[in-house]
Image (tube, rainbow, N blue to C red; front, side):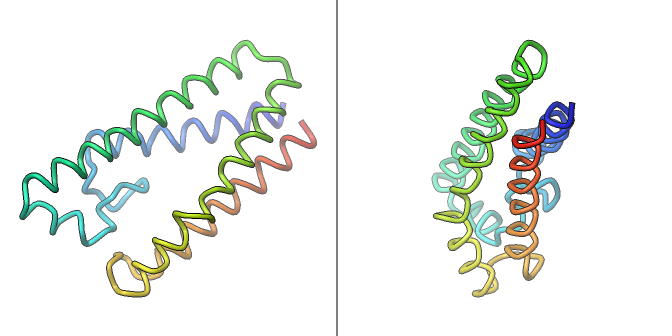
Length: 140
């Protein structure tokens, strides 16, 4: 049951991010890309801005694939499959600290992210997700 609750909570939170990326990518809420100063600057070059928008929409689409798969796992998967899915989410989410976190921390340190210290907040939030995924995978 705990695994189901954690997966559903994750689906809801990530779906808010998908909505923000598709319909308000410049927002500073729901982990949209408005926190990056480069988002506004990219608008000065339509080709670059279109490229960035393409990547943002691609990320949103990839997230939708995972969210729908998680929804199917919640609806039709056994408790064991749900726990294994959470273990997989835990491992996959750890990759954030390999490439994304160092980059957003660097941008934050150079004043390219608003609000300041957003990288710390995001890093902490991702850590909480990982811990919840691990706990739910272990306890079910």
